Image 1 (cartoon, rainbow, N blue to C red):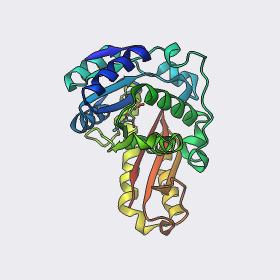
Image 2 (cartoon, helix red, strand yellow):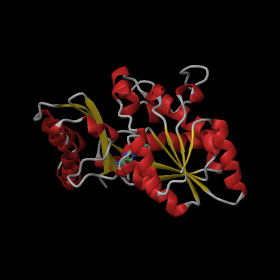
Image 3 (cartoon, helix red, strand yellow):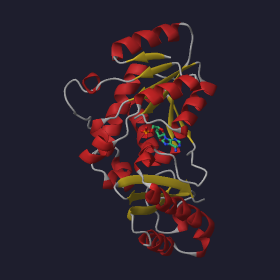
Image 4 (cartoon, protein in one colour):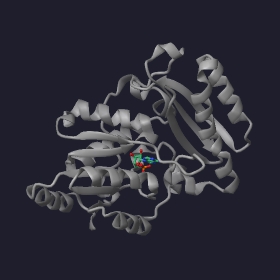
Length: 283
Ligand code: AMP
């Protein structure tokens, strides 16, 4: 696997690959790779000739300095995993390479999409995400971009970004399913920060999602929301930020099941000091 740390080197290399007629699939990550990331690499490999993964812990998308400091960094293990998976190139730039003028973010308006859920609870988060994704796309210029449904709102923001910048004429966003542990917990780099008890308590997230999927028809949206909130309240280590039933397309909260053709449930919850998110389609 080729490893690049500068925009220029990666760009020059990819230009050669593209001239050979190779199509490029791109998987942006923040590292501490797990099977969820692996599934994106696999999808990219099955659909495109040349697969690029990036690892960059993007400071501008962290609204919490401690979260940024504690974010797991496991570059040598990540390289090993990517090599076993047959990834063609890794881009792991420095902070100054990506932010030569300091940590500035682009002002891109996402309207109602960024005022709910993660947008409401993590001020500036999506501005940081959009800024880094745009920078990376300008360097990699992939045909396909692979992202995970686990970060459903992020996928919607990136889809809007592609549309607003016109990049959607050359780049296709492929959203891949959430990969879970056998016990249901969604894979996340932050899971490594959970202690044994927290890892056990974190299962309440998936249990809530499955409960809502099974029983939503017996309750109103507000009743079901209250049941889930009570469920989270039973665990000392859990501090729920939100449960939100939302239109799966617009991501706007619904007040009644009939408000949307497709509804998803989104959850954000602190497990000890670690903030986890998850979502499933309800119908
Ligand atoms: P991250 O490194 O957490 O920024 O994630 C990089 C990409 O991997 C994003 O598109 C995530 O949505 C995706 N991803 C993270 N966890 C999972 C998972 N459990 N299943 C599928 N995709 C995931």
